[in-house]
Length: 177
Image 1: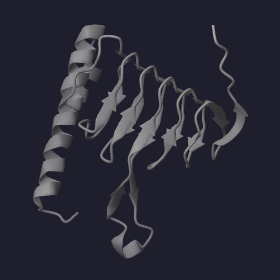
Image 2: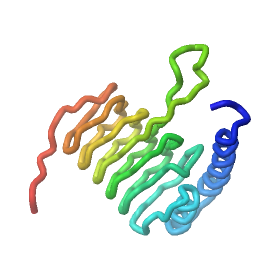
Image 3: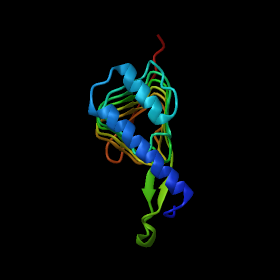
Image 4: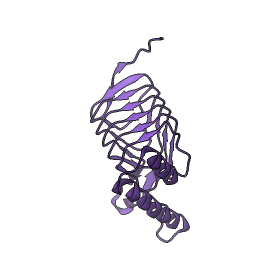
């Protein structure tokens, strides 16, 4: 992205909008309904009444976050959504989860170039506190990411993954009730 381009200008405007909305959300008490309304404004999409977002919440873009119903986002989460973040219904996020969707070039001469890659979080995924999810990762439905894990590659559905880098340690067997 070159400085001064229309695309860069649009990103800058969205970023300023996100800063304004998150500052409002994070600087004083709001009811859950008010938080959802602010989050809807931030994402430019309707956030379902079943979702719970616990401020403070941080993002520098906002418009590329899409989430299903019954999502719970705990305090101090950081979603860098320039590349897109899709969150499935019933997903749970612990405190201080970071999702990154941008990476920089390894060549020092072009390191300022950012490459976006979307992150997809499946349905009923539980991401423990202090996890980091890196660009391009998908986490399959029903999976659990243990607290403090760094997810550098996609995780299949119905598994538990932990560590740095996160590795699958166990399959989750679903019991019908």
